[in-house]
Length: 418
Image: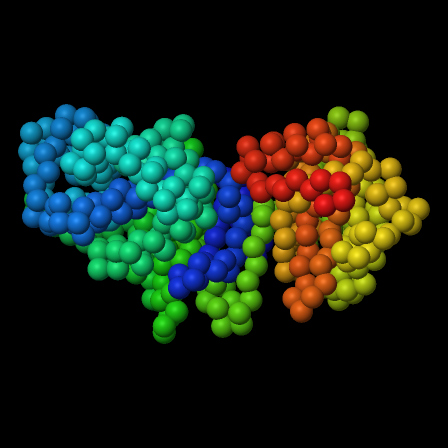
């Protein structure tokens, strides 16, 4: 699936809720602002309290001046009043009320800051390795970061560990002080089988969404970050969920380490030229016209070891693991390359591996200008294409992985003769 036009902050993932298998992913580990998706974790900890018996749905929670002073969206709670846990839950899942989120935080953690630390610890315990919480609502905070993969992990944990309470996410409306409040989750109202779970938006994040849907006995979870509008985000999520259910039937899966280029049919020369087109190479050749699908399939199948130079960056076609060790042809990137390599992903198909390596090259710029893209094919019943950048010395490789890590991309160091 091509990346949406609003790709600057875009990330997405779709998983099988039963086992966590990734059915689709683009930029799954790029950190961004979760916005009101944060409230899913707030609710997770609130449901923990209910399950433990420390609270019940009728427990009254006090409203502090800090809670009442939160920016909209809010219920308009006043300092000194109390609100039942039941209404806090309903306010969070429908109106995404920031004042209610802080009431929950203070009721559980004493202060919102302490509660945020509890949220972060819970995230770590669930395997959300790239998530840090600073508040209970998702209102702007530069230190509050997450990824679509982590949010999918959280949604799956919510469904599995708090199955009884998860039903609240399907609430369409509730009445507060005589006012009917409708859900913000409009996709849930119109996508067959959808039953939650949360929308989110701040200016820095774009329009975010976690969705879950069931068909027959299958459930999938989708997460999107960075939508340009609520409508475009919802429409894209619909496409992702449709694709996810289709892949559930075929058993196919795909994980893309980084979002594809806007023109998903560009060849590798175009991608690498874009990655390295700085300064003196700004006039590098434009992308060649996309090859026909049949020709591209043939090129992948032959997996020859030809090396193409584009914008001062060498691009090696896919070769098998044995060829990688033994190939000594005149054009081989190994001829003059130092022994260190970095690996930025492993994929079931050639093209996403190619795209992931090109994205890494784009991120690294001149740091890897003397390296080479190496798509290394492992033979077996199910071929695996390893996306690598070769031809780096040790300091370059370590610096490259450090830079990729900071940008949210995966990176594995491969030492000489490894």
